[in-house]
Image 1 (tube, rainbow, N blue to C red):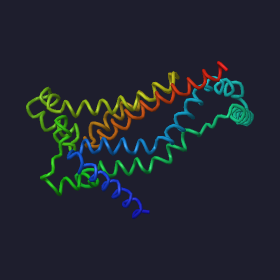
Image 2 (cartoon, one colour):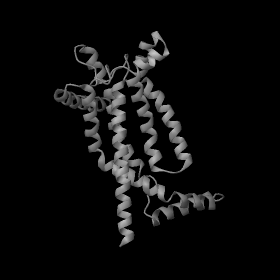
Image 3 (cartoon, rainbow, N blue to C red):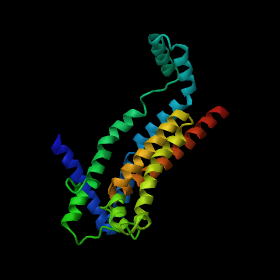
Image 4 (cartoon, rainbow, N blue to C red):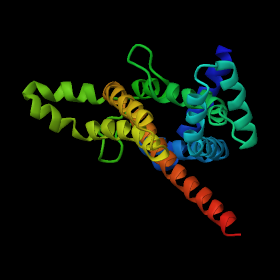
Amino acid sequence: MGAIWDGLKNYIFLFLQFLYGGVKDYGFAIVLLTVTFRILLTPLMWKQTKSMIELQKVQPKIKALQEKYKNNKEKQQEELMKFYSENKVNPFGGCLPLLLQMPLLFALYGVLGGTAKAPGNLLAHLAQNPGISKAFWKILPDITMSPQAVFAAHSASGFLAGVWGALPYLIFAILFAVSTWLPQFLLTKDPTQRKTASYMSIMMLWFGFVSPAGVLIYWVTSSAWQVGQQVLTQRMLAAKENEGAGS
């Protein structure tokens, strides 16, 4: 299993190097790599978003059934299964596509992430080849550094100097946190789920603060693509539903 995992990461890194050969910028190569994989995952993402939207639409009725049979769990489960069947809703429809794409997404993180002691493919490659530029255009001078490391390097002159010196990195960390929260906010109006997404985004803010900038480029690009795809899917499904209602 370890050999298969390493092989997958190596193939992804080879493709990243191929993209780098065309653009001569590893940050931009990560953007292209992310977009390529998101395009490949589009059918799975379509099914996932569609299932989640369908489930959200019937959520009030599901809650009503759960409340009605709250003292009889067996009857509650029976009625819920009947409801799902009659309305052609799969409560796990959004999970399967996510599970199928997780190995690929984790492999991508394994290529782009890591630490100084256990670097991913990209970090190890850049460490072994100090002559290669680590910048992402003029935005991020070094994609191997985390916002935390850049802040620490500049904060010797004071807190504000640290914030100013790390500002581009901090913006990417904030965008990462926002992009974790936004898809859930657009998908549901349920206050509990929105609150959970808010807590998750705070946790992701810390994760982004300590992650290499190359990982943040991947996550921000990936999340931006996801939000766009989700909005498009919602509009297409709404248009199809209105079409059906009109006929």
